[in-house]
Amino acid sequence: MLINQIIDLESKENHNKTTRIVGTVAIILSGIILYLDKVFVWFDITLDNLHGWKNTANYIWNLCQTFSPILIMCGMYLRAYTLSTIVPIFCYVLQFFFVIDSSMTADKGSTWLYVIGTSLGLIIVFLVVRWHLYRIGRFQKLEKELMEEIIQTDTDIFSGGDHEVVKKEKDKKITK
Image (cartoon, rainbow, N blue to C red; front, top):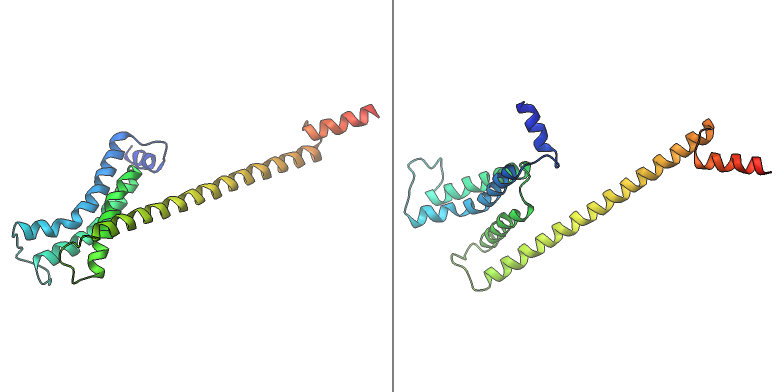
């Protein structure tokens, strides 16, 4: 029974609302946990065992950077709502800007504008790629259907079956 439920999760048609909501929460959480190090700094929480890291904030930040993609994968497996991916995209782009300019310890006025623009740009690129892949899939499906029709027509012609082309040829012979 558990195996059947796992297999059902892989099918796009067989997903329930609760599963999608749990996946959506996982994806949103994957973006939010990227800022858990700021909570540790704000509340002045320190850990005893940092596993070789300089300070608690660096340790928590790197730990969350590792755990976040795992949450994203789990959320996508649970067929999360696609709109929820905006949160981790925005959070990763924001962190990207802070990593690129390591001297920036606080937000500059234009940082949010750059992050929003870059996030929207990434989302637009993803949508365009998805649209092109959908079109390619549609063309391949149409091509397959046409090839199957041609094969069926050839089979009917050569076997003398009741295909339209065979019927027309028989009618032509009878009328002559």
